[in-house]
Image (cartoon, rainbow, N blue to C red; front, top):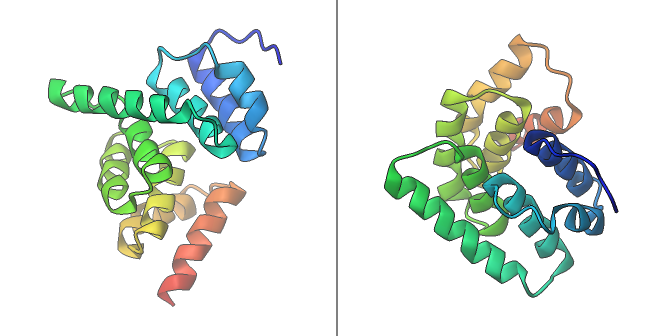
Length: 158
């Protein structure tokens, strides 16, 4: 699997597409040498986790260390990635939710909405999801994944 993408944002977006499609081996092949960026390492770890590969544990530990170091330095540049890591790799929705909320307060892209909705759904906290649901409605966002997450949250509260 050869991709001539050098832009980290584009690589991350394409990796997310591959992960969403269940194409974990393609994501793995594309990202196996992309371990300097936290976001790309996270996506590599997600592919490894899905494939139940033994070196997933090493990347999980590396990411945990990087996020801890970032917090200790007082930098919050990768809060979306830390929220996603906490939710999808550590399986801790209660810890992921405040990270996703903090990220949403600074950055409002569909990926930010998704991690907040996923965290709120898994933490069973529909109130936390309301700012995103309002944003989706106000801005007429047409994203099937986000709409489905919002619907699931609203069904759980009705």
